[in-house]
Amino acid sequence: MAIQTKEELRSYVRETIRSTPISDIHTHLFTEDFGNLLLWGIDELLTYHYLVAETMRFHPDLPYETFWAMSKREQADLVWKTLFLEHSPYSEACRGVLTVLSRLGLDVGSRDLESYRAFFASKTTGEYVDLVFKLANVANVCMTNDPFVDEERQAWENIGSIDPRFNTALRIDPLLMQWEERTWERLKEWGYDVEQAVTDKTVEGIREFLRTWIRKMNPLYMAVSLPPSFRYPEQSARGDIIAKCILPVAREFDIPFAMMIGVNKRVNPALGDAGDSVGLSDVRAVEQMCSLHPDNKFLCTMLARENQHGLAVAARKFRNLHVFGCWWFLNNPSLIEEMTRMRFELLGTSVTPQHSDCRVLDQLLYKWDHSRDIIANVLYDKYADLLDTGWRIKKKEIRRDVADLFGGAFWRFLGKPNPVAAAD
Ligand code: RAT
Ligand code: ZN
Image (cartoon, rainbow, N blue to C red):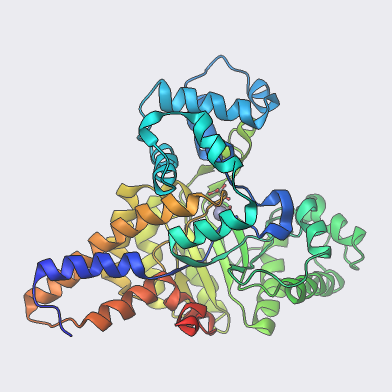
């Protein structure tokens, strides 16, 4: 059935965006099998590193070590008092906590942290996971699986089948960013025949390492976060490892290489995860990668606002490139809106406009609620422009497009069936 009026269009787009289940293609969430790596609940929400950074701005005299030495509950108390009681919590990360509480049916107006704690204490992990997936209308999330994190590597030894709502992604930052400093020694310790120089023997050892983990995890893609100084091709261990190990193995298993580019790591190391920053990167590196390796697939998101236009243009040139998400410091309403509008205008529906990057399960509720509203507004505007030309839009076409934006385009790019469509 075709849409008749703009009012009908607005409400149908909004309704479709709300009711379409999402494949969240990059998160830091885990299944229950990973034990403490799966974070949830109010104290985890409040100590999210985005909020730690904001809190410390109000306490110039509080030594960082003193904050880190506090218990999680004490840290959460300080964040709550500082950002929610002593100042208005309208930053995006603060607002997110309130959206979560509200979506869970808690009384946000009461400001009663203890009652929120009591709510979470009454839930088991399993029932809470079910509740959040249902309320968020998220069908599946992709984890970030890093074999260089000891706790995670150990967890994999006992993991059998994985909750199908959670997909895997093999994350390999230390392989590319610290090969000569220490990663080669770790691989050697784990029994791979490698040396510091990227010789033929090392190449074979790294390929074996990748194959082992790909077989174990069955990842949707291999991923890395890269600094603004990243260039490609590059005369370096990193450049060699990408060209000789990552890309051939990615081809072997037919999985994309995901590049998340633009992080200046630890500009303030005392802040831990909150101490990373952003810098302008070179889209040319992405273009070169796609052009030199036409048989590989690449996912890419970039952290600098200034890189977004160039990246969207690059995706018009290279069909082996799929652009995704409004990453980290870009995950704010004003920037999501701007980026989504620009991407829709340049790429139509062949883009994945958002991922959540959740570190705490509950955040699925706010990150997707907030993004859904923005995407709905932008999409409405785009369809309204079509209506003005006399083009008639069918409801099923709107459903098709939204399904593409919320995972369909991604799964098609992977060449794998979309589990959401299969479940229909
Ligand atoms: O957004 C974040 O939580 C960052 O700390 C990073 O984890 C980033 O998303 C990444 O995947 O490197
Ligand atoms: Zn992330």
